[in-house]
Image (cartoon, rainbow, N blue to C red; front, side, top):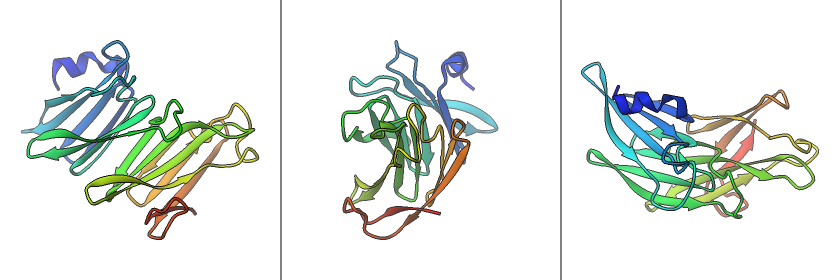
Length: 203
């Protein structure tokens, strides 16, 4: 592993692995603007291949990261950045900003099967906070497919709906230490209320 990536270990927010590519999000680097390190396994040694930095004035870029095949999604304080592998270089493909100007939109991210999930710390009316967004790739562009948010009865004030998220391309697991709960959503191929062709359905 590169010395530069090793030196930033104490600042790492997130990490993800896909085959021989590892990504590390360092959201506090560069005075809080953040950066993401991309490493590749070559001859049994991890080599740093690229460093991603934000193309806008976002903060905590790398708060969350996820990778699947030729796509990387990076969560930041109020947006997500999606990268696509072009030959041997990761290029910015699209930036998706918070739908309602909330903060911590890219709290958690996941990607797989041309779908992206985003966990956000969005206030729940009269309750705690948390929302789950699903985006789908259509004609080389990412569009909002579905959104799920619980009621105040499910998440009381001051509690987050979840503080752990895992996505395998078809199912999302949300875990909450404060609520001592876990919820699983299945991605189904059907029209959603926001007009997407995929929908999140609880199991």
